[in-house]
Length: 104
Image: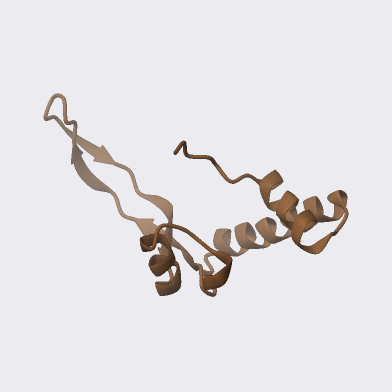
């Protein structure tokens, strides 16, 4: 089965189908939700979505890495990374092979 990427438009279309909101409102709603998540994460707040998971911002310190081709040691600069930790419910759904409406 080919993998497909879920896009903002897909989320908007789901709102149109499930709730019946007009297209412009669903697009704005998706943008507002994603903007809130992005702003919170940028400000260092964890973003916890019940039954889905938690997004956290982590600070990685500078360290020494190794170039796998040459074996040469290379400094890896410090950086911030986004981490996602799925909830137990999400882990269970993924391990069962997908989401179904009956399990929601």
